[in-house]
Length: 327
Ligand code: KPL
Image (cartoon, rainbow, N blue to C red; front, top):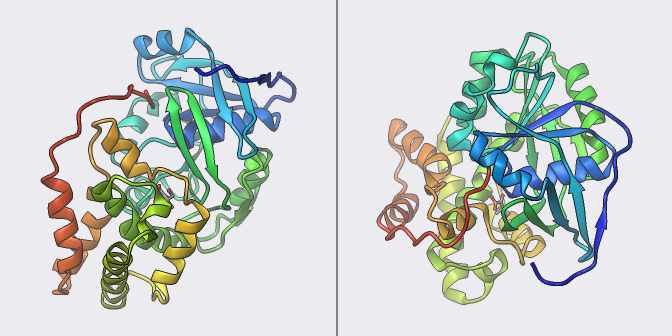
């Protein structure tokens, strides 16, 4: 790591959260919670990953202001036996079910699980399986990327929302908002998190795949007339798919919203491009994939999404030039 001033974040108040999925978002939340005085323990998938983490035993956070903070965090493997009262699951959507399975022996009826993933299907499935009183969803528009394993750069300021896909859980949702508020990531209770997840899905379907195709930072999707046109066509199609899919909410002015997100996170490398650069599985199967399946079910044409998915699918998988993280 380059020579830079690093300030230590020290221990103070205690509160028991476990975090599983130390990718960019996971590291951002873990470090910010720690900085805010909330106790967080990282869950790593095996002793090898734990050993690798223990070489440093901290997460480095580069703040928006450019300061680098060292946040020492305890860690253990998912296979440990202690009970988990509060779990923040920040793996990729595609890995969420299998990651959760590795800690289910540690969960109990009073455990609360907060899911932070792109997409919507896995949140619906886990809520259905474990019960809406235990499972909550978090959506965020903050941007973050990993400079190296456990070394995260907070690249875009946004806001965050937490709610439950099952009605009648407002009290607990608000309590979880209070508990996670110390992260300072502008977390608010959202009485309609389902709508929020659908809206975020539309934004991710428009942005993420294109950043992979063009191998560019978010803001660079607006850099040329061709890219803007490609983005506009995709947004138009996503809007008309939402209009035709009964379970999807109405969506208007998607391109304008997408443009706003791209401007606010211009310097960010999208989560899908971060994956692609590390040779990890693509994210489109949990983003454009479900949209294409729903379009097929309801007989709606979706040539733009299909073409994008086909191009992403046939991309030669990029060589592995990163590190494994989130383990
Ligand atoms: O959610 C994102 C992601 O990268 O997955 C966006 C909004 C595109 C910010 O990078």
